Image 1 (cartoon, helix red, strand yellow):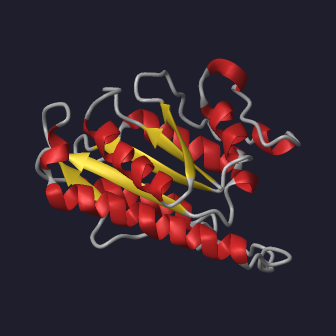
Image 2 (tube, one colour):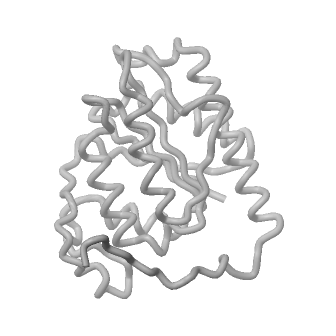
Length: 208
């Protein structure tokens, strides 16, 4: 079993990295492998709603190798769960991470459905709950079980590495990792023969 961790901070070794490292360390103690990808300083395009990805049998975004989106989609084909980590800017996750999340789930949703997911947010003072909710909502729309902790998956810190001093925040990250490991082991110990049946989508617009 393997978990993909995405660091959406422009600072590779900043507080988001500190929090994700705590998750990775605890997953390892539970016998779960993890891999961390850093996307925070990479150019990531927003979705332009061209729907060309729906014409591709391989669940790839039409922008190809222009950024890391297709690389993440390919990795998720081999991973069992995902954690997105982000600093908080203006009460929101980093712009790069939002672009990545929206495109990877829309183009490569087949590789994400049914896999546990979590978001981790780091802030100096406020706005973390709003950013946390923003990252969680797309997972809920993709039939992905959300992994919780003893509190919202939030830690605090300003200067690089300062989040390590947030004792409760680091404990929250470890508890998150323990919960994710437990969920993955439950899913793999008693796998179902197939995913739950999905009803055909019945879109409804209020303008007739």
